[in-house]
Length: 155
Image (cartoon, rainbow, N blue to C red; front, side, top):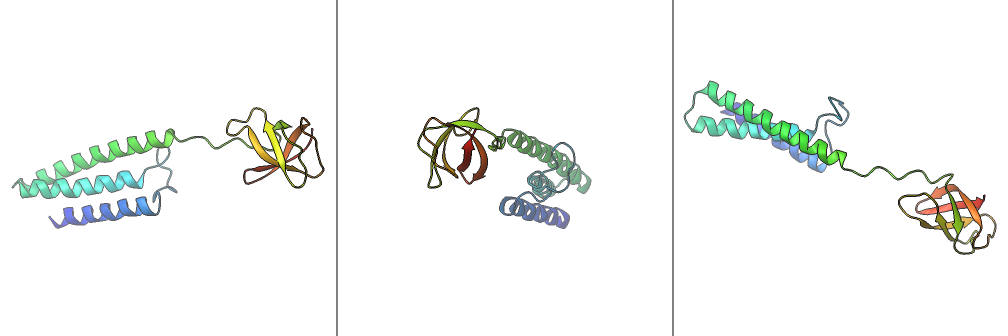
């Protein structure tokens, strides 16, 4: 029974580490997108818990191991599938703004202004600044980004 307690405790520690610190196995690229520390931790916890339950039901030790391994593999695979599905649903990073064209919606200069960008998916209007004063309606191109503000120049 000690083996089941130890493996379950290691799984619990791995689960807590993965939740607090982040993915533990991120650097190991095993399979498609790697193996999740959450899935391994869940598998280890299920191994320990099902082994202890099997032994407490007066099953032979060999059957306790068979049941524990079977449940651990099933739980680990289900957890990995869920983690992969969640990772696939994450949004892609926004496209780079350097080189994007737009039209100024307000007079823009070193003190600031506003530009309406073309073909950008996240925010169409952004705060902007330019090295020289530019009138509203001027066609510009983004030459730099600082946070959510863009540095523009005449196109």
